[in-house]
Image (cartoon, rainbow, N blue to C red; front, side, top):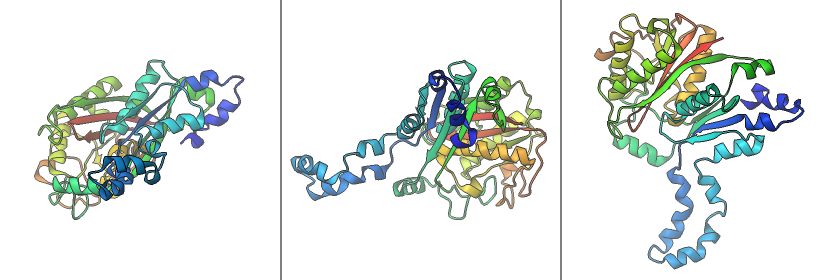
Length: 336
């Protein structure tokens, strides 16, 4: 993303780079520590489980001395700044599946407030065996694939991925004569305060996020070109999301799609990746179909969904994003 943006080439032309670096922020959605990152310690602990003195004595012969840098949840944030000399405000957000979307929203607010002129926004996640085990024990893993809003939906598929985007003020983009692919018009993050795994059956928090985003954008619901739903294939999530969409958009809803049937659920990275995919969909004027949609579930019969490609009704899209802990987020983008 940095290479494609031309940020570094532009900076090289400046007489002084200090202000540019201080006005360039970094915002990262991070998955935090993973279980395998602790594996270096396990053999030594198993060898003498009751002898911590032995553990301490042999520790540096067994565990890599740079292990701390490998497990820091903000290492991506730190290295982006170190490698590129960006010194502006920065945040590392660890908030399950909405972390990436929140990173984008925080960068947007920082630019709107004048704190920075531009930001590198990144989100990433990977999968470990324990994660699959725990998700499976909760009944969240599908055996057949992600079938969002379908009668046969039986869960989600975990996936690994990363996304990155350069976000900047209109003035900054004009000064650089940068190629602009789109614009953020509004966005919001909310919580339903239900619990770690529970969601409000009516999607109350998601409704608030959608309405706040619309208010910030100045748009009405019928002006949204298409909706990229979270659509993770889990019954409670999809059902409550459908209720929220129906409540806000009514019968005259924009076309609705989702991407997890094709790329899986990339957890922390999902919001940012799907924002980029939605921007591409607007450019191509094609709303991807839900490929695995065979027979809509009863709760989804009123949704504007299809297994075929649809056409967006404007050059805007709303991206919905949800995560454990009752977290919700919504974003409205406009393609140039």
